[in-house]
Structures are given as structure tokens and as C-alpha cells.
Image 1 (tube, rainbow, N blue to C red):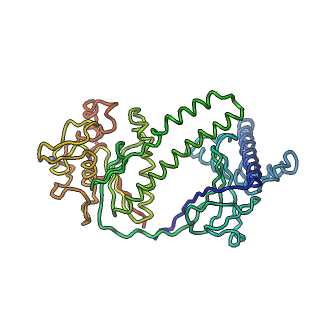
Image 2: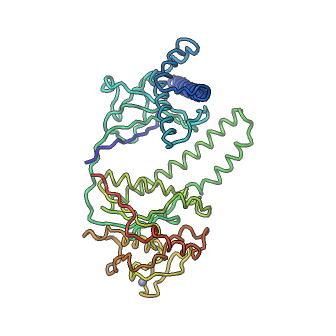
Image 3: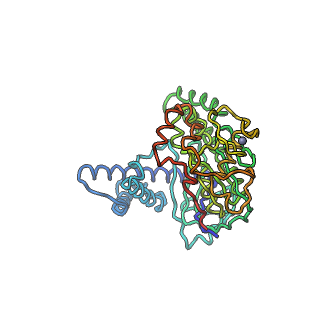
Length: 431
Ligand SMILES: [Zn+2]
């Protein structure tokens, strides 16, 4: 059993009074953030003085009593939390994990964080029933799932299309899924986001592509409108709504697909596609960004850790597409356009992606654990790193439009780090 912080996010519908109060909260928290950020920057530039959350919180208290009495209209915890978050942002910046903190704009997504009083929470919180937020009172939440545990903090946000959300995280115990006794290989691609070694295909919903035309038209309309006009503000919300819709259906697709894969098998072998490098390639950038390949892998990995599954990532130079999964023979020429092919050595008819998925499973160590390899051919010689030609790679699959394969094979052969190893990394599920 694993104990995890699990994040929940629900839409909620504030009353008119709550919307008003939230506008105050957002505005004040933003004001405090921006003014303190400015103070920090100038104090450092002019006098090499460093501020922190404690000195700034003191300053906010002074402001409440003097210059800006309206700051007292917001929940104290939201202002304090904004300063704590700013401290974190600076820590990230100094540790080179993030950029220099930026000013917040009223046109961006708005959010404030509330500290929930743990003494009162027992009587003011009921999962799936009620949630009380300081200064707002009880909020009308659409409980799309039942959260486990008790929240310590709540973040209330309003997105650019005007929807309100409350999110919080709880500590939950997750039971591992029952073992299935099987392992699968998964080929990630563009035509189908995932194809498994037993031939299942997910398709690619191409949310962005389908809606891009619509989005473009609305964006063009927005750009022609006069800045600051009401019509422009309405149009801005409309464009944001289209974006939100695309993001939501993409997230839905990815979650359903990754969960289905995790349920199917005890071990899943995937390729390391090096998403960053791929996105640089403009021919494929749109398609890959659309699918959310990096997110796909991230979800597989954390769900594997939750449910006691194993993910093995194989070398991204492995020739998974170009090797026959039945007899192991290697095909020199095969472009991205070839979707189906017949092996000249054994006569097997292959679907390109399914064959690749079978090979991915074979190249991994998962098949050698006495588990049933779903879809992988039976009489196949195991993958032997010593006898394989290092120059044979499957990288053309994604680099083809940019590089001439012959131009970099020589270079690759000279580099020992590229040598064809069985597995690059093996993420063992935390149990
Ligand atoms: Zn063959």
C-alpha cells in the first residue's frame, strides 16, 4: 500500500456575493504580490538588502493600518500565503529551478490559497457534501469524485474563461492493483498515440487540429477588436474557453489511455522518445505537442508507482520499427510512410507500430521474468546486444525530416554512450 498526496480539483459555482468577495481576494493578493516583488527587487538593486516573507508580512500589516486599509477586507491567510509563495518562487530562482518571479496581471488566471483551520475542519468539511472557505462561507462544489482524507489548504482559482475551481490535496492510501501476470510493450507515435504489442490501438484524437480552424478564426477576430473594449473582453473569454475545452479533452484522453494500460499488465516497456528533441523538429512538433507525449509518460510512471506496476524505458536508439519481431531480421530501408510491410526473410506481414511494440517488449528485460508476454512472438531469439549492429537504429522514425540517416550513423558508431544497451533506465514501482 502506498500513501500519496493526491490532488483534487473541482469546479464550483460562487454566489454573487462570493464572486464579489473573490474579486477582492484576487485583487488584494495580486496587489500584495506585485508590490512586494517590486520592493524586493528595488531593495536589492539599490541597497543589496534582502527581504523575506517575515519582513514583508510585517509590512503588509502596516499597510492595512495606514496606506491601504482595504487590504483588511481579504482573508488574512490569502495575503500571507501569497508572500510564502513568493518566497518559494525566489528560492526556486536562486536554486536555478525557475525564472525570476514575475508580476501578476489581472488578465491571467487568478488564484488565492487558503489555509483551512484544522480545528474547525471537522465540522465544516464533508467530502462530497460541503466545504467552507474563510470569508466566503460554504461553496457550492460540483463533486466529480469523492476525495479521501482531509484538506489542509485550498486553492481557489478563476480561469481566463471565467470558471471557478477549488483544488486541494489530501493524503490517501492507494491499494495496488491485482497482478495480471502479463507484460506488454507500447509503441508511442503520432498516427496512434499508443499501440500495444498485442495490437491494440488508441487512435489519435487530434483535438487541437480539429479545433484549430475554429480557434484561429476566433483569435483573429480578437486581435482586430479595440483594446479595453467590452466586446474584446467577451471575445477573450470565448477564446480562453476554446483553449480550455481542448486542454480538457486532451487530459481526458491521456488519463483514460494511461489508466487502461496500467490495468492491463504488470510490466510495461516503452521507448524513451526524448520529447524535447522531437519537438524541435517542426514537421512533427505540432503532432507531438498535440498528443502530449511527455505528459503521457509522466502519467504512466506515477500511476505505475501508485498501483504497483513496473515501467521499463528502453534505449531510444533501439531499431524497434525496422526489426522483424518474428525472425529478428533488420530492414535497412523503411520510411515513416511505410505502415505495413512483409518481412523478406520469414514472410510475416507486419503492422508497423504493432511490430515496433513487440520489439520494444523484446528489447526490455520484462519478458524474462516468467510472465506472459502479451503479443510478442514465441520463437524469437532474445535481444542480444553484442551481435547487433550499433548503427541500426530506429531514430529515423522521428528525426527523418531533419537528418540524413547516413550522415549521423557514423557519428553514432563512434560514440560509446550511444551503444545499444538493453535498458536505459528501469523505474521500479515504489511499493
Ligand atoms: Zn521476419
